[in-house]
Image 1 (tube, one colour):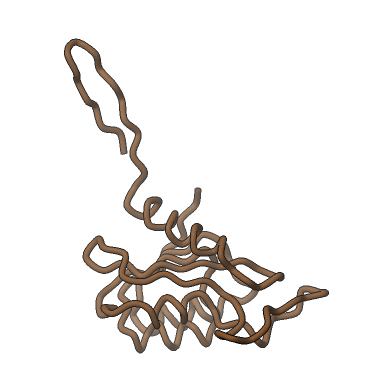
Image 2: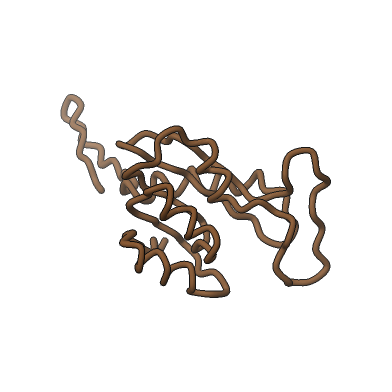
Length: 145
């Protein structure tokens, strides 16, 4: 989105990110705090244009961080989507921005939290989560940067 600002005979073009790009930045920032060595994932719950929760993937509170020597799925980490939903006080009708497409198990929780829309940037190893969200009448969109 481009805005034009005029100040005393000077015109300045302001390039503003779209709503989706703006809130995806919150998800990316949360991913920077990830404690999982295999994959850094972040999520942000947005309700009525207010970020009401963020989360990142990592070991449960008080448990040592996970260390991966290969690309096999992590069995210890709590997923970013789950942590964001736990922090958010309002999820009914909210949007969820996540750096990676939700897995199948997170998608079940997203549906039950009554999130209305999921926006993600990168694909996950399986599309089963996306397929379940669609079956659960959650709008799913991929943001291509």
